[in-house]
Image (cartoon, rainbow, N blue to C red):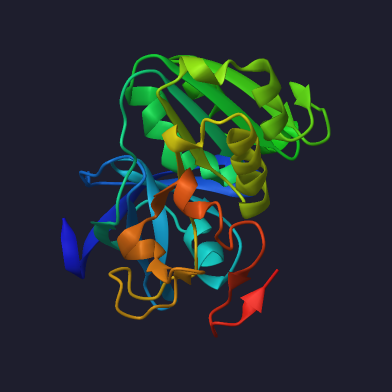
Length: 253
């Protein structure tokens, strides 16, 4: 673990998972619990929080300056890794994993390393489904696409209509805020919220709870230190799916 200075690592392989998502492999493993994150230092650009999709890899969606720089890097180039940080998922028994888009990355190891997992995998379109092949080799994967180009036609939350939620001891969720809010609502309505855990993503500067940039309303908890994994019950009255805060701390829907 590195919670001080970033550990320099060398990129060994770059894999294009979808048109907008890339996995960057490097030459060192970092021990973590599924759901924890690391701070990735892109030299000369910025340091950004990312989940470890594998012990030696992060999966990146191009959304800003740092991620755009990261996905264009080549084997042999160096980045810095600091962490892991935060709280991961508490895993036991039969697991239902629900992922949307690049939110599949923090849940990937659960599908690969734990027995008896059902994985609900969603994306806007078939070309944006990531990790389907690797997950299909280890667990039961069911897919949904917003445009109906693969699997169920609709949001991934719609797949829950086909699932007996009482069969599962753990329900783990990660994806865009609106997707997670819709899943949260379904779980609340079906009275299984107490066994759910959600991985939150917020703007972070420090990664250790000092700067407060990732605090969520209404309780002021820091996603980096108190999360990024929170119980569904804790998030029920939160800002999830309603707004988030930008780098200046201003609310954005």
